[in-house]
Image (cartoon, helix red, strand yellow):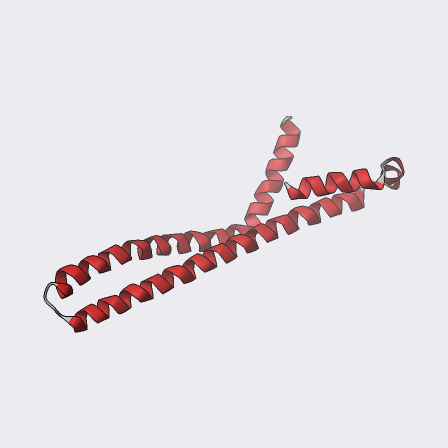
Length: 130
């Protein structure tokens, strides 16, 4: 178990290193998105306390514009978070499949003589589908 564990641990670390940049970008987007989620109720408080109670329609329209802009920004950030997550997942799957294919290429021809094609394909697909 020890050597196999360390080998797979090295492979996982190698895969993570390839996607660390997109993970950092997603972390920043999460923090910005959380700030925008807090901004909505705060703008509502300002609208009610400062502008609705005083009847200031100009200030209210400004706060309403900020509110809708924050909603739009929040939607855009969530879209990019989802897109980056999907791209990262695809990159990880690509990396796993390429390593698996490279391993299949290194196997001897006698392995393919002994192993039925369906069994080798089944093991390969099972390893990458997760």
